[in-house]
Structure formats: structure tokens, C-alpha cells
Image (cartoon, rainbow, N blue to C red; front, side, top):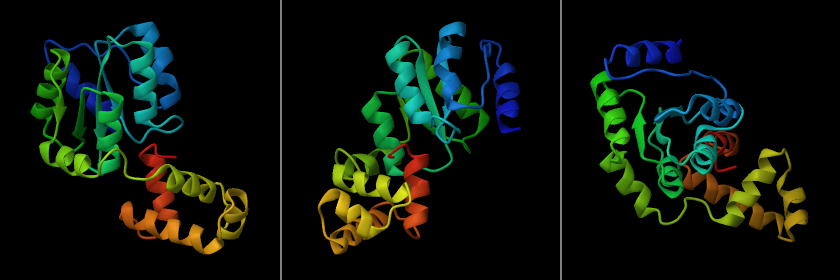
Length: 190
């Protein structure tokens, strides 16, 4: 429904032509190869391949296609990944329609479109919100392993693994481990 409304909104712009709409991240690159869009609007929270991973794949496959990511939350990890991949923009889904149209036009002309406050917060976090070890621990927890099993796999103590998981929950501003896993998956961190 939201995608249909977005397509209808974009089709109201006299200088826009929507060449495709898809609902699954795995379909982005094959569809873009076939339709050759100038700008791809990609939701960060797509099923299958998440939007940021799909955008990175699209950038590698069709570097001439500019990408604008749409997100419902301005989490620093999303901004950081979009910047790291070199995407042209990131816009909140609740932006007014005229802001969306202007962002598409700006991205089309080679400008970058990022909210200043979101970007500043993401940049203050450094090169990434989770360390490689934290990412590894969280990925194993997401696979259903408990602290003892993860500790044995990574040659750590169970207490160290629990400390990593606590730090991850804090860094992601999550409610608990399950919430941290959900957020990390949505943000393409794991």
C-alpha cells in the first residue's frame, strides 16, 4: 500500500517516470539491470536482502544509478552505512511529498541529500557503531546461540560474551538482546 502510494505520488511529478516497483530486496539489481533507472528509491527495511545491502550491490553493478534510501528511523547505523557505501541520499519516510520530489531531483543532479542532524550524529560515532567482535557476537546470538556456546566458538569466557551483548544493546539503544538483533538486521549490520 505504501509503495503504491509512493509510486502514485512520484507519477504526479511531470518530470518523473516510475520504471519499476518491487517489494523484495533480492529483486533490486536484476530489475535495475533490466530497466536502467536514473534514481533508485530504496526502503531500508525490505524483506530478503535489506535495502542498504541491496543499494550497495546496485552501486557496484550500476554505478550510474543514483540511490536515495528511505527509512522510518534515523538510527546512526543506517546513516553510517549509507555514507560508507557512498549513497547519494537518505530521507525519512515521513518527509513531506515536496521534500521527496526535491530530494529525487537533487540526487539526480549529483547532489547529496542527508539530514544534517542525522549525519552529524552518525559521524560522531566514528567508523562504525559496532566493533567487528561485537558484530560477530551479535550474529551468533541471532543464530540462536547462547552466551556459553558463543564463548566456546570464539574462545572467550561466557562473561565476556554477556558483556559484549550488554554493550551492543546499549550502543543500539535497544530494549534487550532480541530488540538489538532485530535492529541490527533492519540496519544491515548482521
